[in-house]
Image 1 (tube, rainbow, N blue to C red):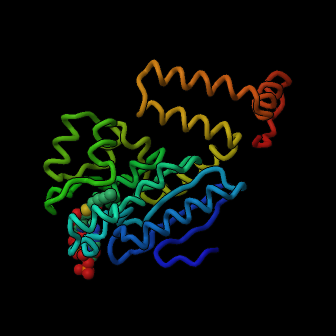
Image 2 (image 1 turned 90 degrees about the horizontal axis):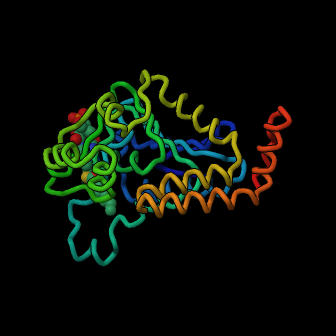
Length: 258
Ligand code: CO8
């Protein structure tokens, strides 16, 4: 396994697991930590035995956000010239499904990291929030955009402009989180979900993820057009032939991922 300082990686039968491991700072996302996340994501992306990825923290914190101490002396000029935190966006280019298993605090960049994942599972005591306003900042990794698209303008405004936290139950009710579990079960359930995804054809799962994500970027007409074209293209895959044939012959499909 690669030698990381701030994360742990392991695989659980077709699911790659990334555990944020800077417990003393509530998994604050230093640049070094984020580079390690990106590196681990890319390794799992390029590993054909892996079909889905889970990102988690510990029971106290998924992550308390960007490393505030690292930003103490940051200037506009420097951050602009170096495109500070640009590398936070790399997770959005990952083609395999990424699931966040959130316990404890998911604040600021931690909440944004969770929202950059494809599915969020949360423990019943998880606390989400975009508290940047209290630091004299605003969310910078998609918080104002992703939160607003999911929960709507009024709620997003209320939360981003007050910095208030919200609970796992609220997040589930608003559709930000898909399921809430007892604290000790979240990770296991997230891995099981990943294994379910990983049990299907990888290129087809990739197409399904790409198509759902296009709902954020395209108009309904363009999105449905994009979906139909991908749907048509999938008839060229062996796995689509296999899946239909297996159904017709009442047997289990054997995916070859091509
Ligand atoms: N960065 C650095 N250190 C942190 C952070 C953080 N985000 N969060 C906690 N720590 C450190 C504390 O400084 C403290 O360190 P020390 O022991 O050396 O004093 C240690 O972790 C324990 O923290 P607390 O003593 O505060 O513990 P509490 O139990 O009282 O509180 C909280 C826990 C609620 C998590 C609290 O620490 C907190 O509110 N943290 C800050 C949360 C926050 O404001 N997050 C937003 C950060 S800004 C951001 O994420 C912007 C993202 C922009 C991305 C841009 C991409 C382009």
